[in-house]
Picture 1 (cartoon, helix red, strand yellow):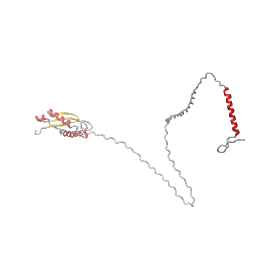
Picture 2 (cartoon, helix red, strand yellow):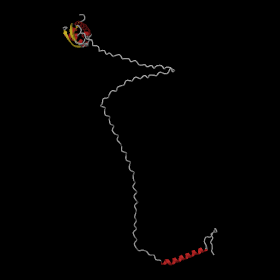
Picture 3 (cartoon, rainbow, N blue to C red):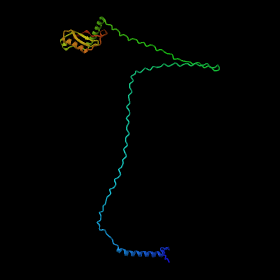
Picture 4 (cartoon, rainbow, N blue to C red):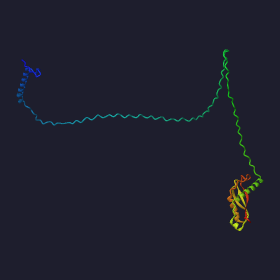
Length: 252
């Protein structure tokens, strides 16, 4: 008969037969240990232990990094040099303008009698005005110079001599030594004048008898020059003229 062992919660855990087999197996195991273990000999090897070799494995080198190849620059294409056009050696022919052709007048066919006749076309032509001819007159000839006569020259010298005498008298100054000694007199001067009234030379033609009076007359001419322009009959050349210079004391 089986004996069931119940757990506290009412379930059976092992049967009696199972328990007997477990006890029997445990006894046999202990018998074997008692019999076999004392007779078992452990053999120990007396050989020297082999040296323990420890090899340190070097880590595998990292795989080389493959860098991408640099992009090659595109080849630059040099522009072709601009060729200068060759100069045209052939002479350029002048362009001849064609005169406008007259517009043809279209003839109109007569319309039937039933339709009203259209007025005729009026053609107006611009009258052509001829430009008057240009007449170029030759340049007028320069007037011929009339040489003055001897009478005209003499009258001009007399008139101009009076003008010079009045201009010289404005700068009259009596020398002190002549005043102290009572010297008087008239000095004739020979003057060479150009066509503009400039004095080219002055000389004593006839002395007054006193050197101081003569020198004073020349000094008066120097201060009065240049003189006014001579008359027309004396222009265009230099000429000589005699001018008197008088020295008189007051009350003499």
